[in-house]
Length: 229
Image 1 (cartoon, rainbow, N blue to C red):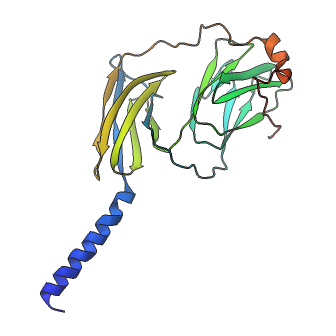
Image 2 (cartoon, one colour):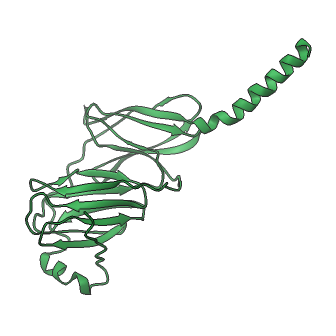
Image 3 (cartoon, rainbow, N blue to C red):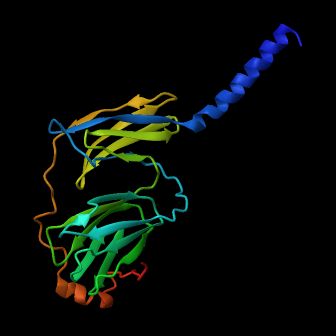
Protein backbone atom coordinates (compact mmCIF):
# COMPACT_ATOMS: atom_id res chain seq x y z
CA UNK A 1 0.00 0.00 0.00
CA UNK A 2 1.50 3.30 -1.08
CA UNK A 3 1.48 6.52 0.95
CA UNK A 4 -1.57 7.91 -0.87
CA UNK A 5 -3.63 4.81 -0.09
CA UNK A 6 -2.48 4.86 3.53
CA UNK A 7 -3.62 8.47 3.92
CA UNK A 8 -6.97 7.66 2.31
CA UNK A 9 -7.63 4.76 4.71
CA UNK A 10 -6.53 6.89 7.65
CA UNK A 11 -9.09 9.53 6.64
CA UNK A 12 -11.84 6.91 6.34
CA UNK A 13 -10.98 5.52 9.76
CA UNK A 14 -11.00 9.01 11.33
CA UNK A 15 -14.41 9.73 9.77
CA UNK A 16 -15.73 6.44 11.18
CA UNK A 17 -14.56 7.40 14.66
CA UNK A 18 -16.13 10.83 14.30
CA UNK A 19 -19.51 9.26 13.53
CA UNK A 20 -19.44 7.49 16.85
CA UNK A 21 -18.18 10.36 18.97
CA UNK A 22 -21.54 12.15 19.59
CA UNK A 23 -22.73 9.14 21.55
CA UNK A 24 -20.12 9.98 24.17
CA UNK A 25 -21.88 13.25 24.81
CA UNK A 26 -20.58 16.26 26.60
CA UNK A 27 -21.38 18.15 29.77
CA UNK A 28 -23.12 21.30 30.91
CA UNK A 29 -21.96 22.90 34.11
CA UNK A 30 -21.75 26.17 35.91
CA UNK A 31 -22.76 28.02 39.02
CA UNK A 32 -26.00 29.50 40.28
CA UNK A 33 -26.55 32.41 42.61
CA UNK A 34 -29.81 33.23 44.35
CA UNK A 35 -29.98 36.79 45.66
CA UNK A 36 -26.23 36.95 45.15
CA UNK A 37 -25.43 33.84 47.20
CA UNK A 38 -24.80 30.19 46.27
CA UNK A 39 -27.62 27.84 47.26
CA UNK A 40 -27.69 24.06 47.40
CA UNK A 41 -30.44 21.85 45.95
CA UNK A 42 -31.39 23.97 42.98
CA UNK A 43 -32.51 21.42 40.37
CA UNK A 44 -30.87 22.03 36.98
CA UNK A 45 -32.44 19.91 34.27
CA UNK A 46 -32.90 19.38 30.55
CA UNK A 47 -36.56 19.82 29.64
CA UNK A 48 -38.66 18.35 26.84
CA UNK A 49 -36.48 15.28 26.30
CA UNK A 50 -37.89 11.83 27.08
CA UNK A 51 -35.63 8.84 27.61
CA UNK A 52 -36.73 5.48 28.93
CA UNK A 53 -35.54 4.84 32.45
CA UNK A 54 -33.49 1.69 33.12
CA UNK A 55 -34.59 -0.66 35.86
CA UNK A 56 -33.41 0.70 39.21
CA UNK A 57 -33.51 -1.73 42.13
CA UNK A 58 -32.57 1.02 44.59
CA UNK A 59 -35.22 1.86 47.18
CA UNK A 60 -34.86 5.49 48.20
CA UNK A 61 -35.95 6.67 51.64
CA UNK A 62 -37.89 9.69 52.86
CA UNK A 63 -37.87 9.74 56.65
CA UNK A 64 -40.15 11.55 59.09
CA UNK A 65 -37.30 12.58 61.40
CA UNK A 66 -37.10 15.27 64.11
CA UNK A 67 -40.46 16.63 62.93
CA UNK A 68 -39.19 17.10 59.39
CA UNK A 69 -38.84 15.13 56.15
CA UNK A 70 -35.32 13.92 55.33
CA UNK A 71 -34.30 14.47 52.62
CA UNK A 72 -36.23 17.62 51.79
CA UNK A 73 -35.70 17.02 48.06
CA UNK A 74 -35.46 13.77 46.12
CA UNK A 75 -35.04 13.57 42.32
CA UNK A 76 -35.68 10.17 40.71
CA UNK A 77 -36.65 8.46 37.46
CA UNK A 78 -40.01 6.81 36.64
CA UNK A 79 -40.44 3.35 38.13
CA UNK A 80 -38.39 4.16 41.23
CA UNK A 81 -39.52 2.93 44.65
CA UNK A 82 -39.53 5.26 47.65
CA UNK A 83 -39.89 3.97 51.20
CA UNK A 84 -41.48 6.35 53.71
CA UNK A 85 -40.07 5.78 57.18
CA UNK A 86 -41.03 7.27 60.53
CA UNK A 87 -38.02 7.59 62.84
CA UNK A 88 -40.06 9.83 65.12
CA UNK A 89 -42.23 6.82 65.92
CA UNK A 90 -45.39 8.85 66.35
CA UNK A 91 -48.65 8.40 64.43
CA UNK A 92 -48.55 10.35 61.18
CA UNK A 93 -50.59 10.73 58.01
CA UNK A 94 -48.22 11.30 55.09
CA UNK A 95 -50.01 12.34 51.94
CA UNK A 96 -49.85 14.17 48.62
CA UNK A 97 -52.55 15.59 46.39
CA UNK A 98 -50.11 16.27 43.53
CA UNK A 99 -51.25 14.98 40.10
CA UNK A 100 -48.04 12.98 39.66
CA UNK A 101 -48.55 11.16 42.96
CA UNK A 102 -51.90 11.31 44.75
CA UNK A 103 -51.71 9.15 47.87
CA UNK A 104 -52.35 8.91 51.61
CA UNK A 105 -50.28 6.73 53.92
CA UNK A 106 -51.75 5.99 57.32
CA UNK A 107 -49.86 3.85 59.80
CA UNK A 108 -50.11 3.96 63.59
CA UNK A 109 -47.21 1.58 64.23
CA UNK A 110 -44.45 3.57 62.55
CA UNK A 111 -43.53 0.80 60.09
CA UNK A 112 -42.22 1.87 56.65
CA UNK A 113 -44.46 2.07 53.59
CA UNK A 114 -43.28 1.88 49.99
CA UNK A 115 -44.63 3.48 46.81
CA UNK A 116 -43.48 3.11 43.20
CA UNK A 117 -43.66 6.42 41.33
CA UNK A 118 -44.27 6.00 37.59
CA UNK A 119 -45.54 9.38 36.40
CA UNK A 120 -43.13 12.28 35.73
CA UNK A 121 -43.84 15.45 37.65
CA UNK A 122 -43.39 17.23 40.96
CA UNK A 123 -44.85 15.70 44.12
CA UNK A 124 -45.31 17.69 47.31
CA UNK A 125 -45.27 15.38 50.35
CA UNK A 126 -47.06 16.67 53.46
CA UNK A 127 -47.89 15.49 56.97
CA UNK A 128 -51.41 16.10 58.21
CA UNK A 129 -50.32 16.25 61.85
CA UNK A 130 -47.38 18.59 61.24
CA UNK A 131 -48.60 21.02 58.60
CA UNK A 132 -45.43 23.10 58.41
CA UNK A 133 -43.19 20.30 57.11
CA UNK A 134 -43.03 19.19 53.51
CA UNK A 135 -40.73 17.56 50.98
CA UNK A 136 -40.44 17.43 47.21
CA UNK A 137 -40.12 14.31 45.09
CA UNK A 138 -39.39 15.10 41.44
CA UNK A 139 -39.75 12.36 38.82
CA UNK A 140 -37.70 13.22 35.73
CA UNK A 141 -38.33 12.04 32.15
CA UNK A 142 -34.60 11.83 31.40
CA UNK A 143 -31.35 11.34 33.34
CA UNK A 144 -29.97 14.77 32.48
CA UNK A 145 -30.32 16.68 35.72
CA UNK A 146 -28.19 17.79 38.65
CA UNK A 147 -28.54 19.46 42.03
CA UNK A 148 -26.34 22.39 42.95
CA UNK A 149 -23.90 21.81 45.79
CA UNK A 150 -23.50 24.22 48.75
CA UNK A 151 -21.25 26.39 46.57
CA UNK A 152 -23.92 26.61 43.87
CA UNK A 153 -22.04 24.41 41.40
CA UNK A 154 -23.62 21.80 39.16
CA UNK A 155 -22.67 19.49 36.29
CA UNK A 156 -24.78 17.44 33.88
CA UNK A 157 -22.71 14.80 32.11
CA UNK A 158 -23.08 12.54 29.04
CA UNK A 159 -25.49 14.87 27.26
CA UNK A 160 -25.59 14.15 23.49
CA UNK A 161 -24.89 17.16 21.24
CA UNK A 162 -28.01 19.09 20.29
CA UNK A 163 -30.28 21.98 21.18
CA UNK A 164 -32.04 21.87 24.52
CA UNK A 165 -33.91 23.87 27.11
CA UNK A 166 -32.07 24.15 30.42
CA UNK A 167 -34.21 24.84 33.49
CA UNK A 168 -33.39 25.97 37.02
CA UNK A 169 -35.99 24.98 39.66
CA UNK A 170 -36.07 25.74 43.38
CA UNK A 171 -38.66 25.27 46.13
CA UNK A 172 -41.61 24.74 43.81
CA UNK A 173 -40.72 27.49 41.34
CA UNK A 174 -39.06 27.61 37.94
CA UNK A 175 -36.39 30.28 38.34
CA UNK A 176 -35.15 30.40 34.78
CA UNK A 177 -35.22 28.57 31.46
CA UNK A 178 -32.56 29.01 28.82
CA UNK A 179 -32.02 27.70 25.30
CA UNK A 180 -28.64 26.04 24.94
CA UNK A 181 -26.72 24.21 22.24
CA UNK A 182 -24.40 21.43 23.28
CA UNK A 183 -21.48 20.40 21.10
CA UNK A 184 -18.62 18.03 21.74
CA UNK A 185 -17.06 20.32 24.33
CA UNK A 186 -18.14 21.24 27.82
CA UNK A 187 -20.58 24.15 28.01
CA UNK A 188 -20.62 26.61 30.91
CA UNK A 189 -23.99 28.06 31.87
CA UNK A 190 -24.27 30.26 34.96
CA UNK A 191 -27.49 31.76 36.23
CA UNK A 192 -28.64 34.37 38.72
CA UNK A 193 -32.09 34.79 40.23
CA UNK A 194 -33.86 36.18 43.26
CA UNK A 195 -34.18 33.59 45.99
CA UNK A 196 -37.89 32.88 46.51
CA UNK A 197 -39.44 32.54 49.92
CA UNK A 198 -40.73 29.04 50.80
CA UNK A 199 -44.28 28.87 49.52
CA UNK A 200 -45.60 25.94 51.53
CA UNK A 201 -44.41 26.16 55.12
CA UNK A 202 -47.17 28.48 56.31
CA UNK A 203 -49.94 27.44 53.98
CA UNK A 204 -53.05 25.73 55.42
CA UNK A 205 -53.22 21.98 55.03
CA UNK A 206 -54.47 20.66 51.71
CA UNK A 207 -56.48 17.97 53.49
CA UNK A 208 -57.26 17.35 57.15
CA UNK A 209 -56.98 14.22 59.30
CA UNK A 210 -60.75 13.94 59.15
CA UNK A 211 -60.58 13.79 55.37
CA UNK A 212 -57.75 11.29 55.49
CA UNK A 213 -59.70 9.04 57.83
CA UNK A 214 -62.15 8.46 55.00
CA UNK A 215 -59.54 8.26 52.26
CA UNK A 216 -60.22 4.60 51.59
CA UNK A 217 -63.72 5.58 50.44
CA UNK A 218 -62.58 8.51 48.29
CA UNK A 219 -61.52 7.56 44.74
CA UNK A 220 -59.48 10.79 44.50
CA UNK A 221 -57.12 9.65 47.26
CA UNK A 222 -55.12 6.56 46.39
CA UNK A 223 -53.42 4.41 49.02
CA UNK A 224 -50.82 2.29 47.11
CA UNK A 225 -48.69 1.27 50.10
CA UNK A 226 -47.01 -1.91 51.18
CA UNK A 227 -45.28 -3.20 54.30
CA UNK A 228 -41.93 -3.61 52.61
CA UNK A 229 -39.08 -3.31 55.09
